[in-house]
Length: 308
Image 1 (spheres, rainbow, N blue to C red):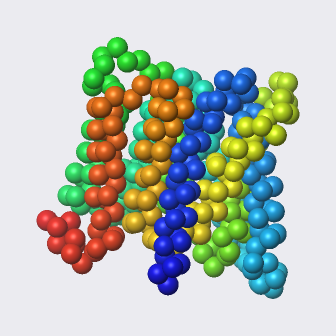
Image 2: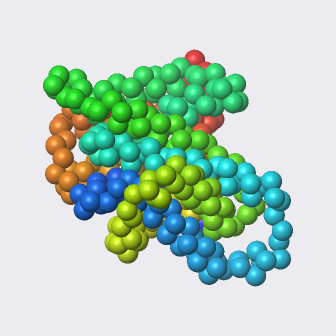
């Protein structure tokens, strides 16, 4: 049991790190002249093919054939998968509109407090004092991490910021539903249905651009493969495999690894400037994530504190 739990922790951590390196690869693909439509479409298509192959080699293949899963579960997974397609599209558009990668990831991490808001709306769960403090800490950390306090001349493209926030909204939905739907279905098969939804959404959004504009098919054997592996194949598969065992509490904390990984990639690969205040903001966000989920890890000891 302990081995399975440790493996699940690793799965969630690696999935988060995969998302962390993604924006840097997207920026590099833009530098090579590829469009957002080409990037998102190639990633979705190659990712779906990769997951179908992965499912084909699944150890439980024979067992899967013998089981019949409810059509409603399949449709729910496809529907939820559209949020993965939206997250990629919005996130890449934020990068396209010139938002630094180190700031794009900070915008995406707003999904942390958005998750608490969704929990309140759907489950009518009022935020506790600890949760309120954590949310305020995240917002303060965001101000520092985006460097708006340190440098008054910092200008962020408004359209890019909006897309970054939209990415956080869709990412919130992805995280909220990834450990709730069709849990009896094997991870590989669940991921296939999720990616069907993502591919349909991406194809729908970029249909006009894909039809009316020249398409560079070289994306499929260059950046498309890399983006598919780190952005489409590994994260959904590993999240659906690890989250149900790890739990949303520790899972959310481990998933925050995406933030420092993305910033370090931006600094060392893209040579983006990351100040000490920005690192402080990132640390504050990470602390807030731990606070938000600490009650799920040690509920008995933390329950009294949260209810004060």
